[in-house]
Amino acid sequence: MRVCGRQFCKGSEEPHGLETPMLMDATCPQLEGYRFFYLLPWDQTRLLVEETYYSDTPDLNDERISRSIRSYIERRDWTIKSIDREERGVLPIPLTSENIKTSVSGEAVPIGMRAGFFHSTTGYTVADTVRFAEYLAKATDPKSTELTTQGARDGLARFRRPWLSRQRFYRLLNRLLFQASEPSLRYVVFQRFYELSDDLIQRFYAGRTTWTDRLRILSGKPPVPVSEALKHFSERSAVERIGTIK
Image (cartoon, rainbow, N blue to C red):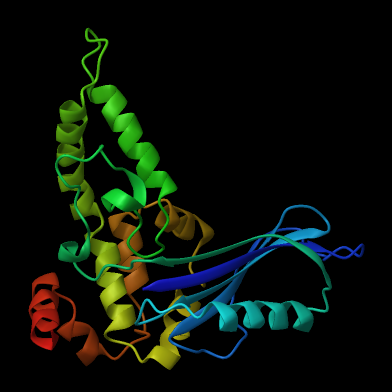
């Protein structure tokens, strides 16, 4: 599970000094698995601060995370003038396709996180939501002026099958992260990944990882024990192992 908390802060009159977003600041104790802070400057004095854990459980301790974010802000020598908004959330990080929710008949047709359309490793939904909307628009009969709920549901089913296949590689990475590596050493996996090229990282976030990218990500000195990685390489074996644990 990916557990996160956010604070949208107004800083003091002094600028925070960030000119670009900081995707991951992992220079902090590695608690509950991989932990990092994400920073997004809105302007010279307004800033979004997010704390994220790649955790084994969906538990979210609001009070602790709020204190942790404030402590991080203090360590950066920033002063909070006011807090515009706070958000908290838990995003699923699936290990197998069986962990991904499917739509339920009778409902309004869901998309995005509710339908299980999200990047399996990052948890982000925007790219795949846009892809489905474009797919649905192209699949609609141009001679028809109406799109029925059932027609949209059928389109969702057709879109889902190849989408699940394209997400298979990201689910593999999740198993290597959550099952093959020690929680306190998960940062090593990300450390190695962010040493790769910017183009590869951009394609990864967009969910457009190529076969060459996959080979590059998995090549070289592995950040997890090879013997453990092989145990969790197969999605079928992961399903069986999870069933045994339950």
